[in-house]
Image (cartoon, rainbow, N blue to C red):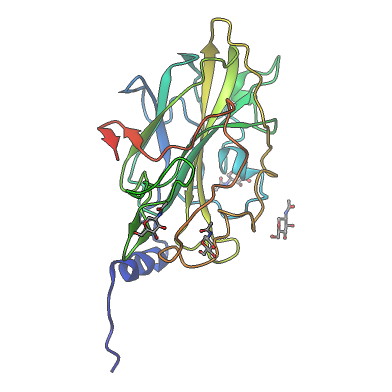
Length: 269
Ligand SMILES: *[C@@H]1O[C@H](CO)[C@@H](O)[C@H](O)[C@H]1NC(C)=O
Ligand SMILES: *[C@@H]1O[C@H](CO)[C@@H](O)[C@H](O)[C@H]1NC(C)=O
Ligand SMILES: *[C@@H]1O[C@H](CO)[C@@H](O)[C@H](O)[C@H]1NC(C)=O
Ligand SMILES: *[C@@H]1O[C@H](CO)[C@@H](O)[C@H](O)[C@H]1NC(C)=O
């Protein structure tokens, strides 16, 4: 008879392999503005038609706004007016229960198209990335991750239910899709097994003289491929000791990745 040693990671892996298991999955339900959860679930965030199932095919058009999220019209998704420079955020119905990162992208709705009709096929800039907590001896030049001996890199949003980020003050006025992307890495050492959780909110940005030019720009699909660093990781997640997020540099130029996450409950170091 085998003697089995159950480590915390054994349980996580076992749970993720249960048939039909949606344990540790999540969906973005609400926008947060200046620390307040806005509206009903899915009032301003397009709801997918696959519950909280993740995406794994990075070249699918579903990577834009999730399965069933190419339009907000049939879903009745509303467009929230926000100010450039405001602090926004996303709340989920569950918990960020898998190791990995959270990123936010933004795409201008084309002229003459109502926000709910925009499918996200245009250009996107990345405005936020929450990665890992920093090691005590990390420096700006060498932002080494904090390491937990049994679980490896300590992820900044682990076990939280929300994150908050700044809408850049230089964002020009207009309608936008704001795309939350969670990237879960617990199986990402296998090709096409990184899990993407995506939700698009519709916003009308009011901006006093916001004259920024969004760049660099990417499209979905196209921004990642299935072997991009950060999508395919070189070893099992508990074993990696560094991590590079996939996708373009953050906009505005000079914006840094976040290692401390502001949630609804406060700051999580
Ligand atoms: C996406 O990539 C897979 C291989 O990973 C390929 O089979 C499929 O045809 C591609 N789809 C598109 C739309 O390019
Ligand atoms: C969900 O929406 C997609 C389009 O993104 C469609 O192809 C698919 O059939 C829909 N699935 C369900 C279960 O309604
Ligand atoms: C930080 O400490 C770890 C060991 O605890 C060491 O491996 C690493 O090289 C150190 N990093 C820096 C930037 O000093
Ligand atoms: C990052 O980790 C990989 C193994 O996971 C290792 O091969 C590589 O040397 C590391 N890179 C740096 C810059 O530490």
